Length: 192
Image 1 (cartoon, one colour):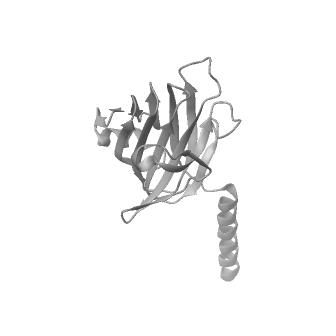
Image 2: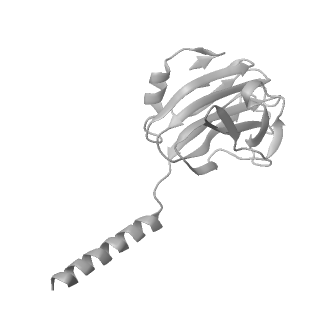
């Protein structure tokens, strides 16, 4: 858990906690840039905030192709069900960041490295992604920054993103099996 930019547990512990999700996932940095809340990496990359505005991010590296899903998103104020928040995903290479999210300008007023274009998450699905949605799939191994921004509603809440290994598609396995079968048949024919 990381609270207002101060690590409570080491990044080595965080890497172990996430190692089953997508090969080896190493959290290089996690910060809360504005607001009251925490960065929580237990089973995924999450944030829990108590007041807005709130902005935070994770820098992480994975050694395998992966996908990103929205695992949980909720509001502390159960009366409000119209909340929406923004998330960013940047590919980090050679000291620069390439923004992969671009559907909305909702994060223009976010703090620091999260500011700019982003995509939306909601609890209702009316205007953005909802828990269970795959946000990205087939991303290559490497270094990334996952940012999160909440400007007003919900005033308090939680979000969790999962980084998961991209499985080999069934068609790919069938192709490999078919090619192996052809090779075996050819070998058996050449022996006869």
